[in-house]
Image 1 (cartoon, rainbow, N blue to C red):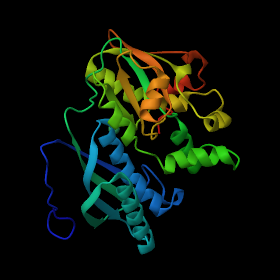
Image 2 (cartoon, rainbow, N blue to C red):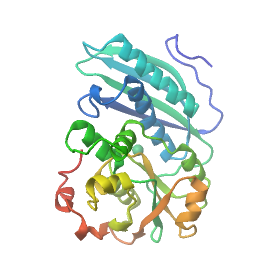
Image 3 (cartoon, helix red, strand yellow):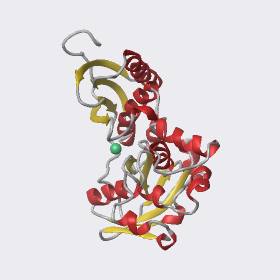
Length: 299
Ligand SMILES: [Mg+2]
C-alpha cells in the first residue's frame, strides 16, 4: 500500500500465513569488499534471505534493508549495492519497502524479509522414519569459491576457478523448486543448505527427533569441484553458502522424477532412520574427514 518515504511501510495481507526472516552479511565475517563488486554484494544479501523464504515453500513479498557503512566506502559502491539489491528484488518479485543507513566499524547489509504461504509450510520438524533424503544441485562449490577468493586455496585461472567463485558470489535461491516441493503430499521436511550439508541435516534431525544415514559418495559435486580438490568430499559435506535445498520425502519419486519436477538436478544421498544421530558411510575415503568432524574445516 505504501513503500519507502514514510515512518513505516504499509502492507496488506490476504489471509495467507506470513513468513518473517532476517539475515546479515558482515564485512570481515562473511565477505571482503575486494572479493566482489558492490552490485553482486547487494544481490547476494537479498538472495540469502530469499533462500530462507524458499526453504519453507513461501513466496517472498516485501523486505526492509539496513545498510551499515564504515569510513572509506565510496558513494559509488553504495549505489552499486543498491543496484544489486534492486536487481535481485525485481527478479524475485519482492518489494523493497523501506530501509535505513547507519555508521558502523564495518560494512554490513541486514535484510528483514516477509513472505507468504497458502496452507502450511515445509518445516524442519516433519522428517519421518523411512523418508529418503535428497539435495538439489551440487554442494561444496561456494565453499571452494570463497577459499579461492580468500587465498586459502590455490587454483590456476580457468573455467573451474571461475565457476566455483561464481557459485559463491552469485548464489541462486531455489524459489521455484521449493514452490513445487511444498505442493507434494505428504509435504517434505526441508531446509536450505546455508551452513553446510551435515550441519543443516543435523538441524532437521534434532527438530524431527530422528536419525539419518547418508552415503558421502552419493553427495553431488561439480566437475569444477573435482578438478580442484579431487575426491576430497569434506567441502561438499561441511562447506556452507551453496543455498541448495535439502528435503526429506516419502519414497515415491526417483531422483530423475524429482529432477523433472523441480527443474534442477536432484540426488538421493540417504534416508531417515529410527534413533538419533547421523551416520555417514563412505567417509573413510574422505580426506580431511577428521578435521571436518572436529569442525576445523568449517568457515
Ligand atoms: Mg536457512
